[in-house]
Amino acid sequence: MKTIEISEIALLLENYDRTEAPLILTRNGQPIAALFSIEDIDIETLSLSVNPKFIKILEESRKSQKEEGIIFLEDIVE
Image 1 (tube, helix red, strand yellow):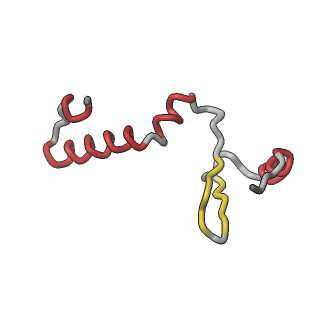
Image 2: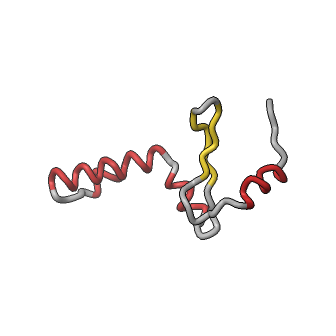
């Protein structure tokens, strides 16, 4: 396992403007992680934004609204 000291990351981020897009970390040209500021984000919002089940509920609700014009509560509550 390779580790990196937090001080090395701090040096990397020193010149990074956190208001820009996330900083994407890659391995062999493939994205493996994203670093972004969470200064103005509460932990619940962050957790929901990466929760596959919640994302699926949102996608299904948007699809239903687009196709039918309405969202039924039973479509989003299990």
